[in-house]
Image (cartoon, rainbow, N blue to C red; front, side, top):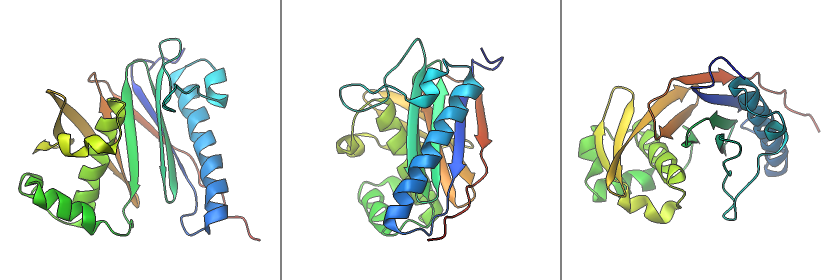
Length: 201
């Protein structure tokens, strides 16, 4: 077992963001598999989980042998999280189109004032943090309105969901933003894999 098994292990696997739809699906799948394998290895989880992490009846990663996982991908980046405690992550590309719809929603709900900004990076960081909290609770985006921003912190955000405050760590990673929600305060160990070269047709 890894000496840092008490940490939250996150592996990031970049891939070219400017691919066509079919090529993107292939590249994203390869990156996701590489991120999962690397996170499992770094955490010291059972090796078979690196090949295929089991899913529950809702399609979410199931806990196995005391290990928990969360996976996410967006244009140009796949991410995998493995930890000994329930935790969840989400990632978003900062070049995401139509981000103004999220800003308008946050404005309507009075959250932009607490956010203290209305730029693309801040709005997408909050959106990503909310998605991480909802993944941790194992619910979908239908609960988004029930996950309001309480405060912005040095490390990310405090959100309110289902009667409890949830602290979310947010990190910038190149052209992406990453959010991690966890039920325990553990160290976050982040590793980034080398990008695969784009395939030329």
